[in-house]
Length: 101
Image 1 (cartoon, rainbow, N blue to C red):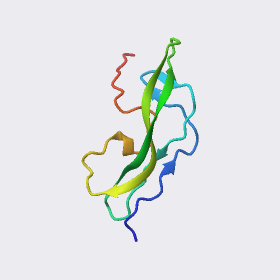
Image 2: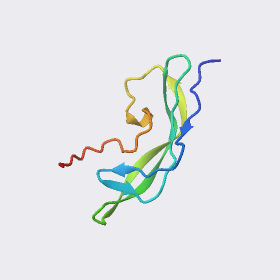
Image 3: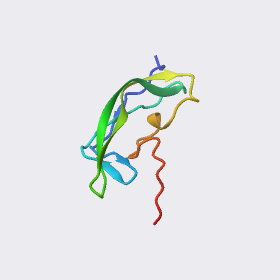
Image 4: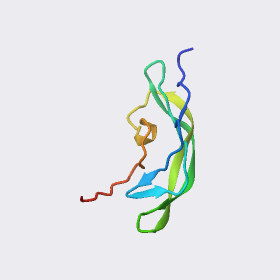
């Protein structure tokens, strides 16, 4: 009792993922981990990786592997967590592109 992650949260509405200035060609409604009731970290337990196709403003298409969360678990090890378990983001982890205005 009280030692479980709150349910995974599904994005309230579908949105496009972005990578650099490119956006996914399909809409996605990913799941996100909630919080643990006892103060531990809630991290992904089961994930799946899918190829996502992105379209750039110049018309180029490319694919990237993206991790989607299926279920979460509570853990005492919190230092390994990255953007995969942070609040919802519309950008991909590892996107280091910088653009000048």
